[in-house]
Image 1 (cartoon, one colour):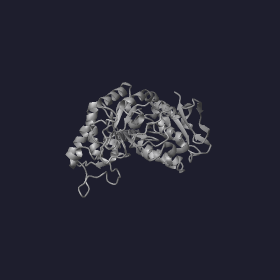
Image 2 (cartoon, helix red, strand yellow; image 1 turned 135 degrees about the horizontal axis):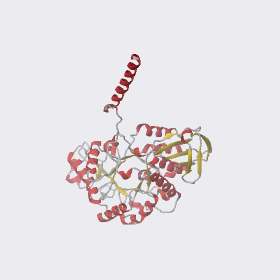
Image 3 (cartoon, one colour; image 1 turned 90 degrees about the horizontal axis):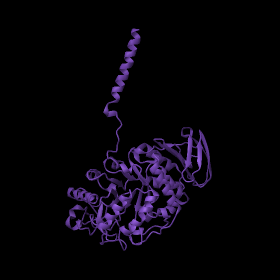
Image 4 (cartoon, one colour; image 1 turned 45 degrees about the vertical axis):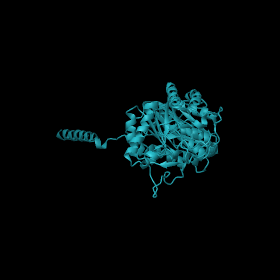
Length: 458
């Protein structure tokens, strides 16, 4: 009896000791992301507006006529490329680059007036959408007044002259020096200016990684004191998630999709990307995923060139993986040429199947929590199949919402067998409305470059 009591005491003591140890804060999991995302961003989608090329007029007012269509498509965040006056000194082309900013607190007269811009922001808000503007914090135009009034705010060559960003051929701009505290204050106040003056909802930061992280961390804190903002970094770096940016670019996914489609490299890189996304990206970090944007379109070719017959496959893929899907101006209309960057080159608007793809994906994103952003969405779980050199299949689930996407990244018809033991149930295919009753084992015939987005019934 004594031995039994002693044994019980030892067991209880051990459990108590173990339990007390697990409460030690040093060993508790900690969320890497310390900023708070705006509540509305958890299932948001994003759309990039190239205002100059969007309409024949290229103005804020003329763009307003497209808002109802974008709202119907399921767009939440309107990202406007830079809206500021463009430098004239060393200008490229007839109209110059948006990214050569002459006045960080001014409006490009090409687009309209400050009041026109405020009217546009108010219109977007009234429709339940949000607006962020492009911010070019790394450099300015040569004839930005700061170059005359505060030349010490810029980096210099050994001969003491202004210089473009080192190692780049951006000869229409000159490089800022973020070692100067006064300049940091000016730039932070300029960021705050647009939130206060025009009630914008945040920023897309051009080449964000060229600017010190501690600048961004402080700027985000000061902006959030005005209102909860949404920040997108044109960069792909873990440190920006902690206290600065809600979302970064996923250039890597673009590259891996290109490898899997037109570069004939297979899907090994794509699978590796998915593994890294699940295992290394902070759970509450947002990633922007895309098949086109202004840089890709103007400098790296059209989506048709980059993804070939796998273009629709790639668009749908970016709509269901972890991340926030981007649609670029004209992409929904099947834009199949590179828009001029420094001159007028209006988009031709027409009905196109891409709009159906984006619309269905955007609305599914709103409704299905498995596809929500960051920690609000479901983890991508690999669904094993017997053609893992060609077929990508995975499962995402959150709060009874679930999706089972299957992609044939090859130009061959594939008869594929999937191990769906843990993913059984009744599903509806997103694009065809066809019903599927998924059992323990599933066999499918997949045409070249075909895809299924199976949405689980509740």
